[in-house]
Length: 271
Image 1 (tube, one colour):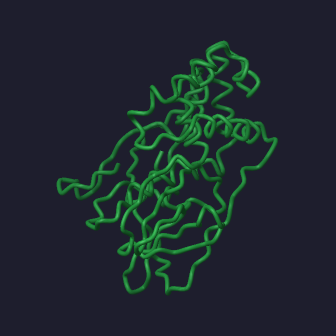
Image 2 (image 1 turned 90 degrees about the vertical axis):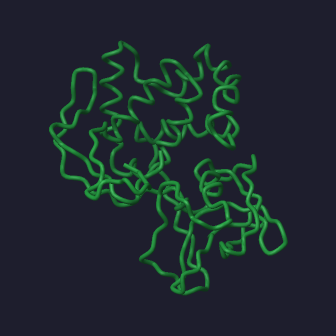
Image 3 (image 1 turned 30 degrees about the vertical axis):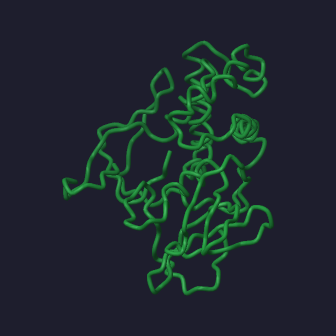
């Protein structure tokens, strides 16, 4: 549980929650049933999350049981394309999400990723895993990772704006040492002498670049999408401390934890 305030309990915050696979399966079912912009936005972000690496079979099993309980077919891309609400979904994209997301990506960017999701879910393809962006020139502290949730960085550079752009696969108009460039943001690193570096790719040339954060003069999220060449580490999940859980599945396909408490420490995946 992310609580970056002085009254955070010393032993952390314990909560009971649904597991990742349960949430993902429920969101896919909800998307097919009601075809709302929020469901599409969430489904794609969940698909991009690291937790899908080893949980495809669990997600698909839960989805099939949920659909059986609701008396509906297991979804496919053809079913979604053929639904009469498809046109309304696109028309309402900006209206329903524009006030919730600081820089809303275009509808097509999310809709066009759905076929890949279903191919992965049905074992037609494996999920592509791009490489990490290479280290560039400096003595990097490889033991340091940026916090996964929003932080008060106490610096003028809008790092959370850049992180939001990375999560939505949108380029950033970066002002750096008096000039501007369009970049794809990928990672935040720290040198051994304590300088923060933004690792990025210049969108128009494909060149890898690192930018010292204290020399960044401005950053604005654009509407220009990018297809990741590297892992987007600015939003990747990190270690989670949790005791083992025993799961059981109800008739409706709900995967329920039994008698467990979960403590989430430090880094967690941004959903």
